[in-house]
Image (tube, rainbow, N blue to C red):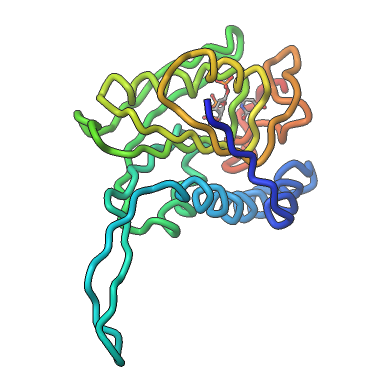
Length: 211
Ligand code: PRP
Ligand code: URA
């Protein structure tokens, strides 16, 4: 599996705001907005482009545009915080939705929503979720996308844990990963260490669970 770790001073500064427990919901959301845009920018580097003719106020020239804009697929809840930054980078992208909640006992993803085009053949997909921990949620999401014919899938995560990266790589699914960091491990509750806590809670408010 191809992995890109975005190593940039501005990305590292936003990630630090997200990790810092003193950052409130608003500061966390603002940092994710900026960092999400940086990750989407990097993930877009290999997208196919096409030329078209245009006229500047001075002369005729060639313009460049995306051949097929990727569909953005957030894994709800936390992935919703990456939709606006993704659309700011790719305004003509469509958006699909996958709703998953991790069972806090088993750490397995429990699906509750699937709102996607029936056929994703030939369609690049950016699946966005700030956290890749055990990998269960992302694997479930990528399988759903592959079942609909997607073969060009990029997972965009802020914090990835090594066990989740390994699970994704071992799956053999057609996915590459763009992330701001790969953290070494998970704690007993399958939270990423050092991580940033529960991304959904830090974006939108707590659900009273033990980290
Ligand atoms: C978080 C996160 C991922 C998942 C990662 O979502 O946004 O979807 O956990 O964990 P995994 O790699 O072990 O599956 P969560 O299930 O907590 O739901 P939420 O976004 O609604 O808070
Ligand atoms: N989900 C989160 O939001 N954070 C983690 O550390 C692991 C799963």
